[in-house]
Image (cartoon, rainbow, N blue to C red):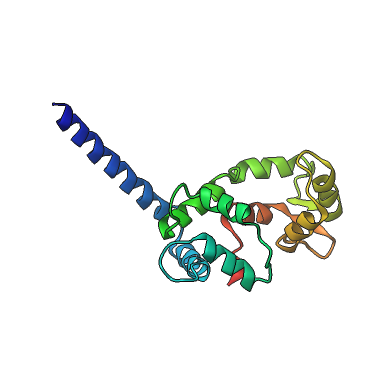
Length: 174
């Protein structure tokens, strides 16, 4: 009886693992999966289907960063909780992207700074808020954020478009 229960448990665990990995693919559109596949291929330097410390080190080297500490690379690999194949790679990105607040929550936060309901906030005011409030951004992080932000000629941010970019990615990247 105990062996039969153990067999049932392992079958159930296998089905959960299969569902878990198949759900990863349903989190993304096919075009996004293809982009992740291309990124994975670039990082998997030895083309063995697994991202290793040497793969990461070589990728950093190609990007011009030669002195990456082994501890830093090992921390990255630990996030995968085992060998990082493409499915795990995709799951890691899914976890990171799912950490984003829902679009409606982000919109509601912006609306606090838009009392007239225009759908816009002033770029300079937004920049100042990012630099001085709550989880303060560095100037570099602010500049990086503003490069992907839709700003009109008057210097106003279309925050509805920005919310879409934050939650769905920038469709104009193609």
